[in-house]
Image 1 (spheres, one colour):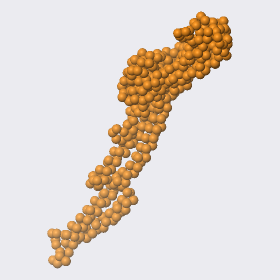
Image 2 (cartoon, rainbow, N blue to C red):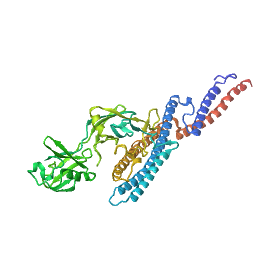
Image 3 (cartoon, helix red, strand yellow):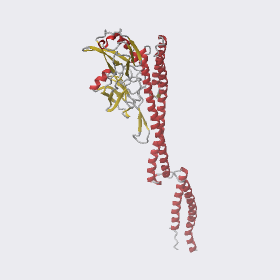
Image 4 (cartoon, rainbow, N blue to C red):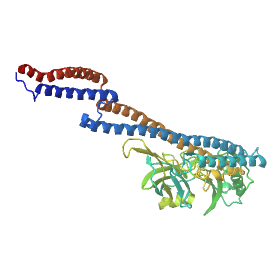
Length: 487
């Protein structure tokens, strides 16, 4: 064995191993104290890149979950306001039905109903104005789609919501092309009379029939006698027009004329059901009208609207599968059938929520203008909820229809909001929660310290460090053995 004084290779080797052991022990202590396997880039450069990318995704998803929960709160706030609007509309509907009972009401009672209705309408507008989340108003149309009629000659009203043709509504002009014009039921009687001054006994030239008897129109019986004139019979029929929905007129021909019965409303929901005890009019027993069908284009997207789709609705009141509706005027029913035209505009606003960790992962929903000037606007030409007047018999009937459509519009919106909450927001929250959990597990397997393994490593390195210190002390004693050679 060679002995050196200036160079102690054993001590140098022992020191190197001791330093390595100390570094390993220090790493184990650092990992155990921090709980992380990667405390600096040198610990695992590739693992650091993967870990930080996963951490970014996890943080983004956790924030997206919070965003979706906040979105739920926004929608719930809007639905809370709409719930109260629904309650007020139910009250207005009850008052309108009460006012329509003209046989029992006196002017004071009807005016009291109108006063309560006006108060409820003011309350609805106040709710619409005051419902907001933070400073963002939710029901006044700024967060949704607004539609406006620009051609009042052809269109009596328009209501376009946030969904059109199965997709989000796009702003733009509204063009209507009536492919099938609406018609009202018409029944031309086969019996003839010389003129309106002719006696009913002169029916068909006085050769057939008694000229008198009972006429039944839509369940209402009308008694006529042979000594009545044609005009008298017309007056009796027209006096009940508000009940039967049917009017009568004398149509002159080359030799005398006949009686024509006309339904006052368009569409298949309104018919003429006729019977007579003897030959008086000779009208058809049952006739119905036809509903209008139109192709409606909004912002370049086209879908089909069909009239008379709800009970009692006019054939001129057209709706689509998304609950949007338009009201054709009689002029529009004719003119738009031959020449499609722009009749309105749609402007778009929406609530957009970021529900994902990456760009473009967002969803939008529109909440239209729920003010009374926009509710029930496609039932009676030129009328909306805020213009109803139940102080007249016809006004009360119109009010019932307008309020019922208003209820439908609010209910459709509430259903859309509920569907958005359940099918979009809640499902997203659940999906993001599962994904975040799995990504967190993956990130932890890369970045977190395995405590059990690190305890083993620390114990091993601690023992090696102590042994190394002892061996280094022994190695440092080797040069002193040279002194024995000098003695």
